[in-house]
Image 1 (cartoon, rainbow, N blue to C red):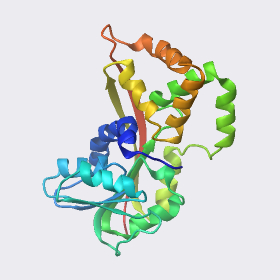
Image 2 (image 1 turned 90 degrees about the vertical axis):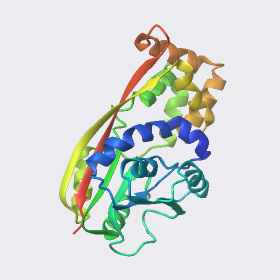
Image 3 (image 1 turned 45 degrees about the vertical axis):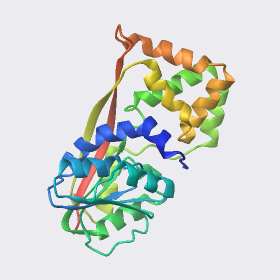
Length: 264
């Protein structure tokens, strides 16, 4: 899957990443003084949380997209954080280089997840934590599922066509993540459910980031809204109205699956 425009992405999904990063770091047992690898660092949400949560921890962020690396360098101007271009399946680091290797909300994007996890284990010291989390895309991300429901209401044919063109394997479960970690020769494997919530000040606060076209899905939503002359946004707003407060604000929950294990 291709992504573009890191600024638009940060406004669209980056704020969710920033909200999830602290509980994920607690799950991953972040400690002060650690050398941390942030695999698929994107716009820098996890790296920012690392340097904010641990006073002397250092983090190396790695991402395949040069424009995202450049954005992260600007977004996290901390001397304890560094970013470079690279891929998860071939990490440019020596064996046992890090105390912990982490991947926030990118595992499903790796070309070869098994190879990526094996590489994370390789560069992590013996006994160090290798951890990742990803959204429960089936039932745990209403901010997206509501969009799909509204799209099906206004243009079911367009939704069916998109899904046919973008057929992928089923979404990973906690059991799948557990099995992946164990098959990567990691020990003391543990899984958890991480739940957060996002407060929106208004429907526009929720909807406008979709129009940035930062991801294939948001680009589809923006195009469909244009094709339906704003019909998608109107239906979506009507769906959300039931959970709005009198001032127009509302809260949407989210759930992610997390897994960790120790390098041997």
